[in-house]
Length: 176
Image 1 (spheres, helix red, strand yellow):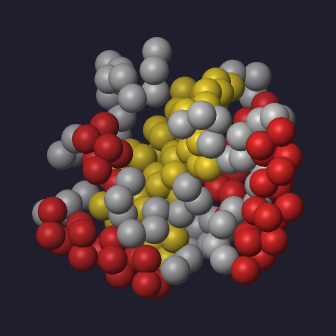
Image 2: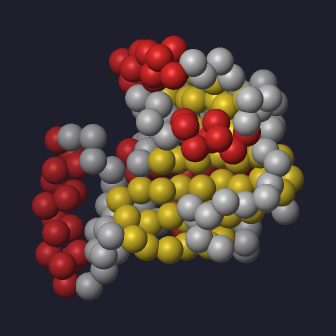
Image 3: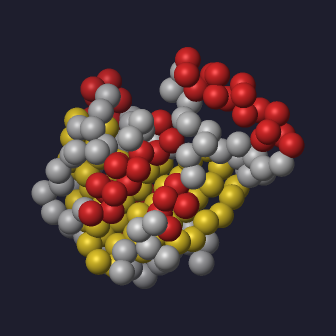
């Protein structure tokens, strides 16, 4: 099943780790419905400020925003779904953040990571030094992070697919 396809799963709560300005909250809210809860976690006060404005503007009353590091936030309940959306590769302690999010998932829950990556082949090899140099000067993520492999250290139930000519990926794992 494609990641964007509707699934007949009743979710009660979701977490967006590195929620930024809140642009990734709408699909999580749709999944949990009016009775569910969404938690947005980000370290940046400025990003959370924008997310709060968005939540107010759109009338999202079932979103709780938390200013916390991705390796030590505490959710008030285990969640059915956690997502890192364009945030995983910029988290310095990404493996710790992954394990932390995994530990806050309910059994049967999904952890999804969507981020940018270098394309495979010669183009990726040519771009690699430039991207490494640029990432040290900006908020571009670490091009050598391979979360699909890191998820496989937690579970064998990992799906992976690429998009946009191999410059983006989505990987998903289910907690059994």
